[in-house]
Every structure is written in C-alpha cells, then in structure tokens.
Length: 217
Figure 1: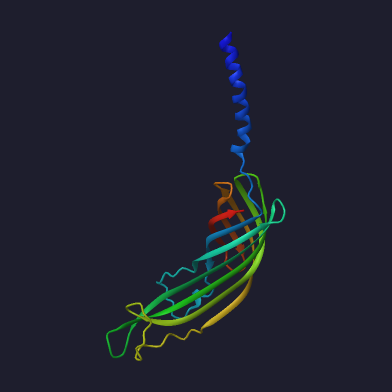
Figure 2 (figure 1 turned 120 degrees about the vertical axis):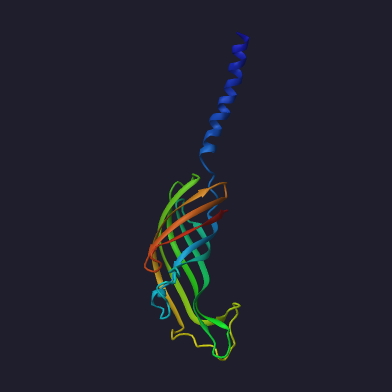
C-alpha cells in the first residue's frame, strides 16, 4: 500500500512536467518582426542564344548563380514585406585564335554583370511552428551589362597589337522591370535561425530558385 501511494505521488508531478513540455517541443517560439537572409539563387542570361560567335557545340548555360542579401519585416502576424539585392559577374570563353606574328593564343570572351533588386509581399503560414510555408508576389529591377574582350592563354587580358579584334557584338546595358509570383518555405532549427527555399515565376528569369539561411530578431 505504501509503495503504491508513493508511486502515485511521484507520477503526478512527472505527468504535469511532461504535459507542460509537450507544446514547447511541438512549437517554435516566434522570433521578432525583423529578419535578415543570405542566399544563392539562379538568374537567366537574356540574349545568350543570340551571340554571333556562339557555337552549337559550346555548352554555356543560359542560367547562372547569383548571390543575394535580403531583409524582411512582419507588420502583421502572417504578413511580411521582403526586399533583397543580388549580383554576379560571369565570363564565358569562346573560340581560340592565334595572333599574326607569334604562337600566342587568345580567346574571345563575353562578360555579364548582373544586378537584381526586388520587393515582395508575402503571407507566411504556421507562424508559430518550425516549418512555415509562404506565398507572395512582387516586383523589382533587373540591370544587365554585357561586353566583349580578349584574354591570352595565361588568363590575362592581352595587350598584343596583332591580336584579332573581338567579334562584332555591341556592348549593352539593359534595365528592365520584373514582376513575379513566389512560393517557398522556411524551416527553423532554433528560435532565431532558419533555412529557406523559394521558387519564383515571372517575366524575366523564366522561373528561378533561391535557397539560403536567415536570422530573425
């Protein structure tokens, strides 16, 4: 009788502790309204198919990776405004050509300099959980610069006066607005830190993906 009574006394507080701990294990304490993110995303290189010296057997991808920094603010429990900037420089090397008076080899190059600025309004579900999917829409500005050049076989820009001239492709700079719809999710692995994956579909990048890390405070 005494042993059963003692066990019931011990089981009571233990049950209270387990029941009170269960919600804490199932839910994540929501961070503050601010968040900063660092991400890697994809971008489409418009016009790469139209380069005059691009050859069919060359496998330059029309997509490239872009580094992004972002921030967001929850102005209501489930509604947030997000902004991010991205940039990338990429150089494609094409056909080789020998200079007139030497055996030096030079290569035609085409360089892209990309800048991306975007704003989005998002609705985030399950705000008090660790796994938080979201949907949204937004717009921004895409700035693309392109120019041609030559490099020698050591990888440096050639200064040989006998080197051939780059093909006739104009240096260009375009600034175009973008609009997109977005879907993604955020997975918290602590009360303040998370990782995220986001898909975008719009008029500029023909669909893109972004993934990275975030911190809420």
